[in-house]
Image (cartoon, rainbow, N blue to C red):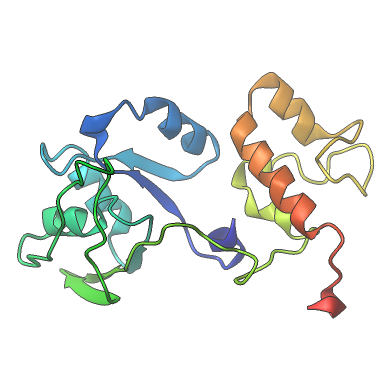
Length: 194
């Protein structure tokens, strides 16, 4: 939602697809209108699709520590030889390896590798005001402005077209829950308070 609010096109990449089935997760974000793919650096699955997704601009790889951002970059262009860590047998996840943001040139575009994070704290970052928030969920766009009431919050309101789409399965429940969670965090904040 923060990326969309900043006019940044988000692409979702599920790494290490050899560790589990990602189809259900892919469908959630495809239904939301986002570019999605799963990759496996061991087999090369999805690498060509990622190359297509990031072509012609500047891309930032971001995600939790140890999810395989640097490994994916190495698969995109083996000349990078970026240091990667092994999966911890104790924790069952990748280890923190990248320490600095590095911008890599790949043909006619750039990719930034970033250090991972263990959690994302949006309170100290960007807040999306409640009136702007529905526009940050691409799957809501065809329903906005069509609700019975112009003051519709798209959370519990009668006559809400987004709730109708949710009930029909056109909007995934987890995405709407994310919206409601974010809405509840900002619903009482006024711009003058920021």
